[in-house]
Length: 91
Image (tube, rainbow, N blue to C red):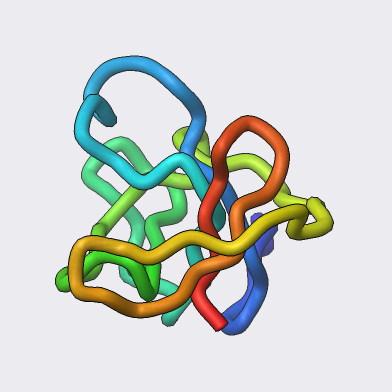
């Protein structure tokens, strides 16, 4: 089974549990991780508007394609572009 997502690719977390306090924008795949105990692919992802990285299973992700439509500042004062649905992408 091959990995669906590659390092550097933009993805979005699927809504719902366990992802309650997540950014509503895209994340970048940082790297592949060893498969989870149930055999599913895992990834380390990051969002420039957050100060940490996340470890997620492949089933928790979906592809991301969006054009930014407005500018906004994140909690650290960095500029982000806001796309459809309030998704923020730092630039």
